[in-house]
Length: 338
Image (tube, rainbow, N blue to C red; front, side, top):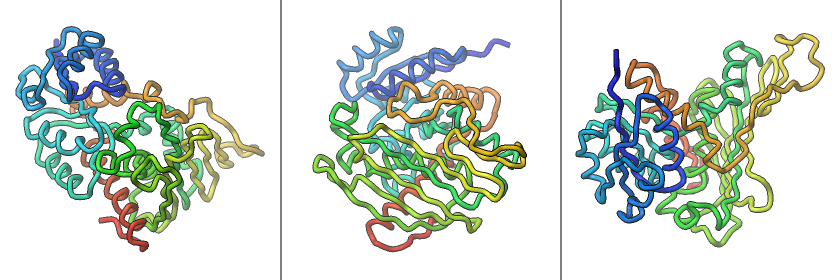
C-alpha cells in the first residue's frame, strides 16, 4: 500500500537544521514542506539552498496551521525548545525536538504534560542513543557481559570557542540554561539509557572563563534507584584539548571504557582490554550525529506504532535529573530527583 509522504516543517535555519533537512529528505516517507526561522530573509535563503520546494513562513504560528506539515522539527536555541514544542503538540503535530527538552524545571514539566496529553509521536535529539558505539555497549549489557553494573560514569567535555556556531547565545544562561543543561544533559541521558533511573544527586560547579555568564564546569555524584553509584560531568572550559565524551561502566564481571571492554565470561582467555570497531562520539560537530537514525525511528513510530528510543516524556525525565544537579550545585546540598 502506498503511504502518503509526511511533510516536515523546519523551525530554525542553523547548522542543526541543515542536518535535519538531510535526514528528512533521505527518508522515503518524509519531505521538507516548510521552513520558518527568526528572520524571514534568512529563512528564504535557507530554503533556496537546502529545500527549494518548501514554503517559507515568517511566523511560526502560521506554519503550525499548514495542513501539509505533519511533523515539526524544532531547531531553535535552547530557551525556545519547550514553549515551541508545546505549541506544536497542541496543534496536533508530531515533533522532532532538539535537546535540551527544557531549560527550567517548570517548563520541562509543562512540556511533559503537553506530550502526555497529545496523541502524536515525538523524538528528542539525545543522539547518542542511536550512536553505533553506544548501541554496541547496549548490546553487551543485554548479554550481561559485565555482570552487575555498580558504577556508571559519563562526561561531556566540550570547549566552546568563539568560532562555534551557537557561541553568541550559548554563553548566556537565559538562552542556554547552563553547562549541564546545554551539554551535560547528553551525559545524564546516556547514563539513564545504559544503566537506569537516578534517585539523588550531589553536585559542584566552577567556571574558568569570563565570556560566559554561568559556571562552565559541573560535576555530580549520582545515586541510582537500585542503590548503585555514578558520576556525570560537563565542562565547556576545555579550549586547549579536543572534545571528549567519556563512558565508563564497572561491573562484577567486567568493565567498559568507551569502545574498549573487558568481559571475562564472554572471553575466558582475555588478558587485556578488547576493542570493538566503532567510531567514538568525540566530536562537537553536528555532521557526525546520527540524525538519520533518529528521524527514521520517529517516522517508523508514526507509520507502524513502534517505540522511539527517546521521546519527549523520556527526555523530560533526563532533564529532571539535570535540573536536580543544577539545584544541588547552587544550594550546596544533595537533591532528590522527583
